[in-house]
Length: 187
Image (cartoon, rainbow, N blue to C red):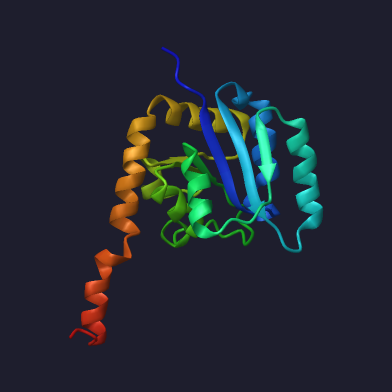
């Protein structure tokens, strides 16, 4: 039986550091549109030339849609939940290679996980070597295709891992009791 097409989304700021143009080029070159639909959803402020370049590339790339509509939190989460894969690709603008705090601090990654999305990222680290993450070495056609195929062939595993990761690592209620006690707020 053939796997259903993946629905992938990039949702976030549309700027060079988010690697949206590289993503679109790799999506086209890898013929990822054969296995996935890609939705670019984002906002921009002060990045108009880059946004225009992304819009031009979207028009030339099969299987891709784009919108810049602002959604309130609840509607944004509904939008994300319609997908299987969330893309979190970052350019190392400082040249440090230090992304160690990105996984636990990224609102984008947290939202993807709470919506049970696998996360395809370029952030290296022990936590990105297993579901719900797929870490690609570079934003290239072969790496993007490999990552999407891996998720597609194990989608149930990735979705469960995303839900578990969100509940374990991004559930503030789990840590609040300790914080309240430490601050002396307990009744």
